[in-house]
Image (cartoon, rainbow, N blue to C red; front, side, top):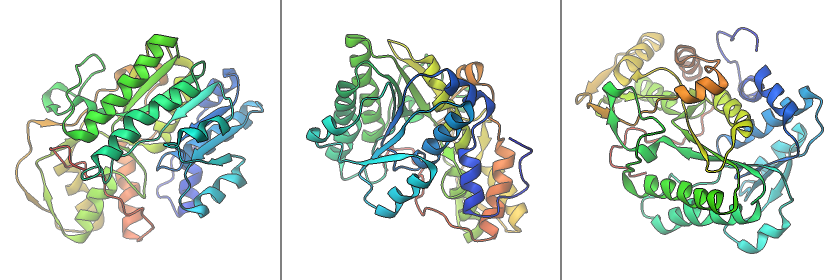
Length: 345
C-alpha cells in the first residue's frame, strides 16, 4: 500500500482501502490451494474480506472461487459482491437441510455469530454461536478452517498486564462471551476428533470508519455526551489489517487449533482518545467516573510474530475517524457497546 491518505474521501475509497491486499497476503494466497468459502459473509467484516481474498488471488495469478454464504436479508447487499467477482449463496445456516447445497471448499472462513441483541435472545445466541459451528465442522471436516472468535472469552484483565495472552485461561463474562467460548470448544472437539486443521482468531475490536470503538467514541464527543471512563482502556485494529491476518492464517492452521489474538499493538486510553477527538473536532469533552484497573484487553504479539505489525496505526485511525465524523459521512448505526463490563449486549 502506498502512503496512507490524510483522509478517506468517501465510501468508494474506504471500500478500496479495506479490501486492498498487502504483499504478504498476495504471497500467502499464491501458496494456498483451492477455493475459499466465507460462511457468514454478510456481517461487518465479510464484504471487504471476501473482496480482499479475490483481489489477492487475482494479483497472485491464481484462479479460484471466492464464495460468500449468508442469509442476505438485504438483497441489495448480495448484489454488491458480484461486480467484484465474489460468488454468493443465500442460505439459512441454522437449517441443517441447506448444508448439502454448499459447495466443497478446502478453505473455510467461519464468521457467523450473534452478539448484538443477545440479551433477551439467549437461546438464539447459543444456537448461532455453538450449534451452528458443529454443522459447519461436520460439512467441512477435511478443510482448513479459520474461525472468528473474540477476546471477550478472556473476561476482564488487569490493564497493567498489557492484555490477555493466548495461554491465559478463559473467564468469559455474560452469556454472549460464554457462548463464544462454547463455539471454540465445539470446533476444538471436531479438530481433535477428526483432525480438522483450524485457527481461532480472537479479535478485539476491528474498526473502520462506519463502525467500531473509535467511531463510538468520536460520535459521543461530537454529540457532547459525557464519556464514562469505567472501561478506561481498549485495543483496536484497522479492519483491513484484521482481514489480512485472517487470510494469512490459512498457512498456520493446526490440529488441535492454533489460537491467536488479533488486535493492534497499542494499549489505548479512552480518556486520551476522547481528548484527542475533542482537539481534532474542536469540542469540549466531559467525563464521568474513573478508569477501572481492569478492561477487555488482548496482547497480540503471537500474531505479530507470524504476520507482522498492522499497517495502520491507532493514531492514523483516530485522525481518519475524526475527519469522517466532521464531514458527516455514513455509519452503520450499530454501537459496539464495548463499554459494557457485565457482558450484556
